[in-house]
Length: 267
Image 1 (cartoon, one colour):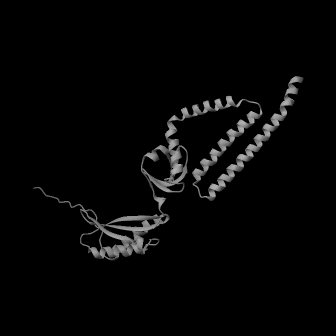
Image 2 (cartoon, rainbow, N blue to C red):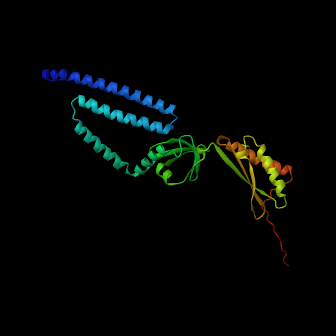
Image 3 (cartoon, rainbow, N blue to C red):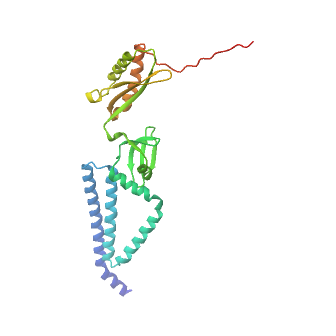
């Protein structure tokens, strides 16, 4: 027992140094992560990418601190490295079905086809990107539903990013009776479009009124206007209301499908 105590006392300096290395390493990791996060925030880097880098810093620093502490305690790092290699291989084997998602997540984070906060359309889903993780991307739809999409699907299919341009086009199809005068109809639709609040009316974004095609029961006009992305829905519903009121005021009818029923009396 006395010999054990002597050996323990001789080992105490190494334990003390190891604890100092551990404490200093933790403080250093927290400081580096904080400075990195602050710098990325100042540079306006996407929050998901910033989170990925901070997490990577934590992992690298923890591994380095662990190796330094164990080396100071006299533990062979060769065996430790072999253990970590085997553990990494086991994790890779367990995640073999998610390798494509992880690779796609890295591609999304670095190529940035969209970033956190963008409004995207993927398949049947439209919503705001709330998080880009290593395996999946989360979007919040207009009906407040959280949709989780595997990253591998996003990189192999078409994604429409509505936030890539601050200006967005609003398109509304308007069926008009064949009996209505074309020039008058265009003038009424143009005035209606220009009167809607938040519509852009500069030279580049002047509202456009076009006769699109001849329908079975109506002339089909298209109204194209531009607005800032965040004003899309107020402008869209404002156009719908204003167009109908303007057509009614100018006695321009919107036809609707009718069914004529002929009753034949048989003797």
